[in-house]
Length: 358
Image (cartoon, rainbow, N blue to C red; front, side, top):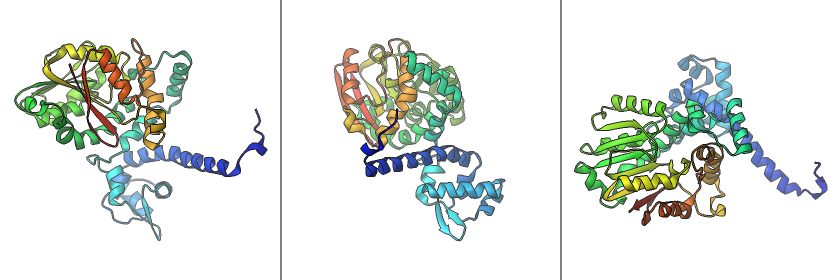
């Protein structure tokens, strides 16, 4: 079809084109950001000192001409600071986002996860999923998705889980301090599981995930961290994990990915100790689309369309809640699972934490 340009509002068109150009720049920047990490460019800039391209190339064993173009692209996007006279530097804020993996603002995991969906093979899988509704299983994705997702969520968990989220639950902290048991369902690489284990050395914490490569990686990380005596990992799905009764069962940013979230919570109810709590950590979202039409909602809807919804559709039931399910739909799932007490216990700009009890 051809657009009748006489019907087009030029100001609105230019506004839209401005957004498109901004997005094209972001798309181009994404692989450059990951190259910057892989080549050590961000780390070499993290001291905050000014450098010229040749100095950075010498520090990192790279070619000056390529590094100059990389620096210019990063400065144009505001990811680095250009000081004039061919000198670039990284501000403390930029370092927190791109160079410090322990910073609560560290964002490179998000780039890694999203770029894993960009190959021709991944696009073909997603095209088929959109056409037939059969989804794309988590295990079908590139391994960068598993590592990137873990790196993306870990900083937020590290900043909030032990000091804010667990204390917001009913009596959970005292139970863990005195030797309670916790199950972390859909644990992925196990960062959340290990955080609980490190914070509560008397507790017994088990992470469960249906993806064996992630469980194997989690076991290796636990051994490296020295917590394998009290933190363990098992291959099991959300509807068949065992070992209860548990004082705490957690789902970190994964319930909406499950094909049968009702079945998962119903099984958790059976594994829950009397007076125990289920903690659901879900992406921040309002109940109506209009509430989520913002940069954060855009990011989470993008993740949902590429990863979360197809993952759910590939499983039994295929409820496909999506990453922007919101409180009302999450509460409904808990109610269908026979859980009668549901409340928002805490929140951050990126997550909502629900406490669910029998």
